[in-house]
Amino acid sequence: MKGRIHSIESMGLVDGPGIRTVIFFQGCNLRCAYCHNPDTWSISGGTMYSAEEILKKILRYKPYFDKSNGGVTFSGGEVLLQPEFLEEILKLCKANKIHTTIDTAGYGYGNYQEILKYTDLILLDIKQVDDISYKKLTGKNKHGLDDFLEVCQNMGKKLWIRHVIVPGITDSKHHIDKLIEIIKAIKNVDKVELLPYHTLGVSKYTELGIEYRLKDTESMDNNKCNELQKYLNDKLCGL
Image (cartoon, rainbow, N blue to C red; front, side, top):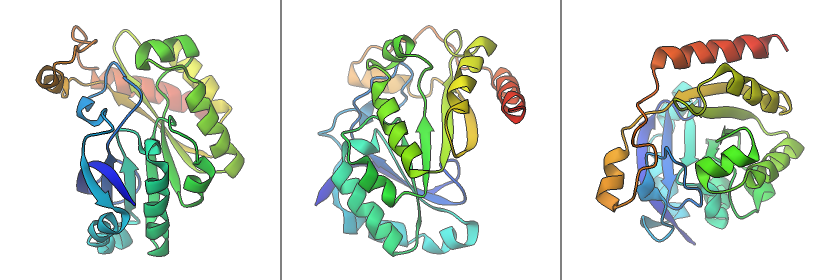
């Protein structure tokens, strides 16, 4: 079995604990207005690899994983769009005692229980806080995320929640209060990260001939994003 891979980052430091190899899967069925990797959207792009070929690349860095409590993170695109391939490579990683993380918006084709059997940590990207705003931002309703999250909860999986802060869209305390209400209902949340919106991927839209929907939106101010992170942390600590 082979899967489509967009790119591989050998020594990632922000996609889970410790030093990590990050495998970016090709293909995504969301069209987020702020996506900085539109080149990952097409499921027919990328480079074909077998699970064994990917494992060989991962194993090169296992000494760094062991020293830093790191491992491998499967990201995208959307990793859940290649469920059988993802399950196969996760199994190989666990057989080699490698910590596994998937970075996902929870929008795939099912097979979630089998995938999560071999997943140690989930980085879950919550795009928006209600169905209407979710569809406006991504082109899809929120039900796909809800279905995936239900499986995560039933299996007791550890989660890091991520949420992008976009000026004029998700950068108010009122919005963060809605996000907190969602997080309060989720079990096994170890961490919540607010990520500042940036414009680093805008040039890719020009190259691909795709309209960038947030072309008039400036990058999120890091100080304001940090203030919202503190606001969120303080509220969650009080629960």
